[in-house]
Length: 485
Image (cartoon, rainbow, N blue to C red):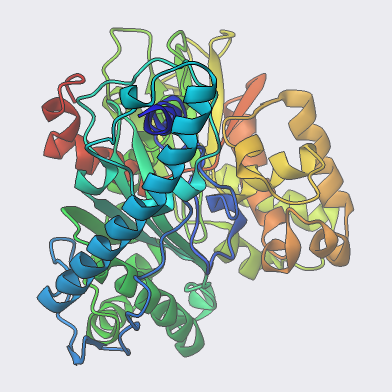
């Protein structure tokens, strides 16, 4: 019992303090702003499909045509039977390992003068992969709440976001009220919007890259019993003349039915995903999400009674039809002189000037309890450069505070670097070297309209917002006796 108590205690103590304290990513991760390589504390890394179960070919699953999966589909009966058999095998192996562990534990307790009979076998043990991920814990920690269900019994939720630049998936289970634990994830830079600004259409190579990434996401989703999911597409599919045609292809080849969301929904989801990064005493926030094809900005007034949902406090919002991909394609992203950079800033500033609701937080702009909150690859890149990281580390970036002078220095540094210097930086790399200055230009235009002494960095966004809303609407936090959603 002591070993099990230690494991359960560690699992409880390390439970995520916010919806995405450190989300692990899948083996195909190539996009650093989603936490590539950062293991969640107390949680196993991304779970691959069960061993011995081959991934289905494109358009097929278990030898049968793939049915479109829109968020309410489940894994096939054969797949679930295989999973059940493998789960039983894991349990048998675990019990065998457990007897050896408890035998050693009995001897240690006997040596300490404790009766071995007092150590009884636990009724429930965590999955083997969770056990393997947990480090040893010092004895004497209090027993966590016994009402907490085992991880394998918790409902599973999923969120997929196909953006102009990235394809991202998160699969998670609810934990404490308002929190969840990521059990699988995937992220890949696909540049779906490449060439869209010039042609008005999605290019064939870009669509091919996106479909290949979505096939991997489909395999991951079909390998689990998902209670609810939401699969969204944003600006590239919204504006492309062949956006609907592309989504039909995704449904045929990847077996996923994606939903194109409007810009207001995109802004709301970005806010929902960052709620835990806004402190209780904050009076006002301008949250911005600099995307590949658009940039969402939400003004949040917290001077009155605070609702559990941060999105309820949005007093004004806008979505600029400009992002890092579209801006870099118009002005150039490789050889960016200071004059070109200034022209990019001005282009965004003109668009912000047309935003009628930009003054809705004027009463709190001078307050020390007002700040900016950025969620995008641009701000996470700036944070990584600011920290001088040898390798991007989401755990150090997500939630980081940067003051005005630090942001100024980082922008000035990046503008002064040539393309090869940007490529050489481990927090930028070849995938972002031609986009990061366009993102900095959008950031500078935002800072000019809403000057703030502080900027908080969020390595989280739409997927986390989707998961939070799905779980709250499903009532999982209300039903587990830990509070009301």
